[in-house]
Length: 240
View 1 (cartoon, rainbow, N blue to C red):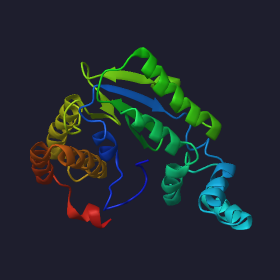
View 2 (view 1 turned 180 degrees about the vertical axis):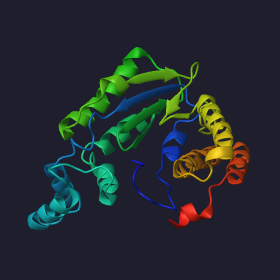
View 3 (view 1 turned 180 degrees about the horizontal axis):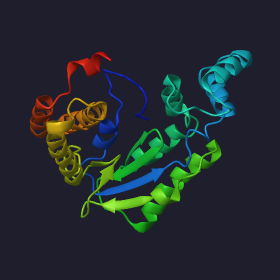
């Protein structure tokens, strides 16, 4: 339950989500289908009433204020907090069951990951997956079957597009190479397009990708940042 909440003391991010599963031998990934649309007005009202113990009238008002067209809207500030509580009735029990068996569990919004520090049998894999489904179905959710994946450390293991085969999460090399190539292309474009608005938008978008690399690969990110600063758009664009 690590997404959508700003918490400096206990960061809840895709990086933290991936870190929990670093260096494990087996990784099981599940995705909740249409998570936000399937988090209904009634489900949100239930969070306010049963989890926070507000009265029925107050819960109705809060649910009306935090839903749109009868569902949890993606992008609203309150939605991230409510998304973390959407499975509050059944998720704690699942976490305890898995941890009692030596497994690690985390959820980043609609991305569910379970990892094992040792190799497991097919029966154990079925046990884990069926317990995840037993958590989702009573809460009104269903798994996205196309996102179901079981991988082992003999092959690349990824959690929210981060590699977790090693001790710390890393951005896959193919992604870093793509961004490095984009920086090279923008350096060439800067020779003729640096004063255009389209260049400014490309620079901003790419600089965000470069910052993400730095958060996982400091030296590599600093080198790309230095190159990006050399082709920074005119300051007037930032004022506008």
